[in-house]
Image 1 (cartoon, rainbow, N blue to C red):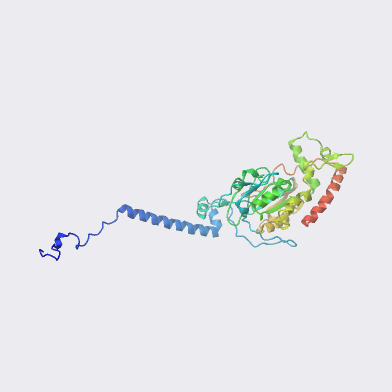
Image 2: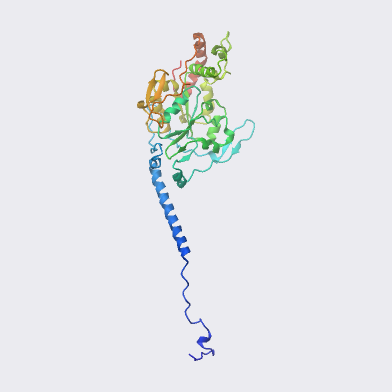
Length: 386
């Protein structure tokens, strides 16, 4: 042990140079627990993500016990005889992600972009899908049967619609698309978001505004004999303001000359050909469906078949969903959405119209005839009002 090396120093003189270092102490227990917890979180995330994928494939799993209908997978488009409807995607994207406000004499004003759709994980925890901008809109016309059509469509499990009229593209456009989308109901994959505001059809700015939201939006117009529609419009106003002038006095600008007052809204709305022209500058005719208000009463299942085909929906709403109410004079649903009871539209529907002189009706029909015929040519459908 006392032997010297060439350097004159003993191996004992340099402690630790040749002896092995002791092993490091074992990691603390807390680090092991933290690692175990992190692994557990990763496993749980992967489990939930895979579960959401399964639920997306079978969306009915998300609805068990929630009282909602399970969504159906998107069926192939079925067209009615002599009608061709193009296949169009329901999930419409924003044009360049921007909302444009059309103001006369000013530049288009941009609104904030709408937020992205929630992730599958957030949809899983909410259990009710996500809010989407509408892929289809009932744009008109007032007193044509729009409320009846919307109520009938809501029976379909793949249709989710706003109950109240949003009036976004005519009154609240300045609030932006994010505000508009927040009004919509939540939908699952394969379901359609809809709304109806009849005044859109006669609003000059509405076609450009809807096109700026999405050029793929499907548009539905419910039309009715313009003479009957005008009387129904007047009847509704009369129920709220009993002191208004008579229908005849409001109809004519000059009674003796037989000049119709087209500035009165009840008359002006019925000029369907005039109102359709700006829509055709922004949307192809094949992207619009014209529903007969008269056939919604006489054959609701037939008109609903056309609407379902147009929207690319499975034909679920049929004759079995309707019965004719003799008191009101129009069809009612045997089972309304979310209810097992029969359902008719409110008491404001089916009001008795005031008696109108035959000569007034004749003059009104003569006035509307050229507009009606032009409308038939534009739409390719004769509604038989003449």
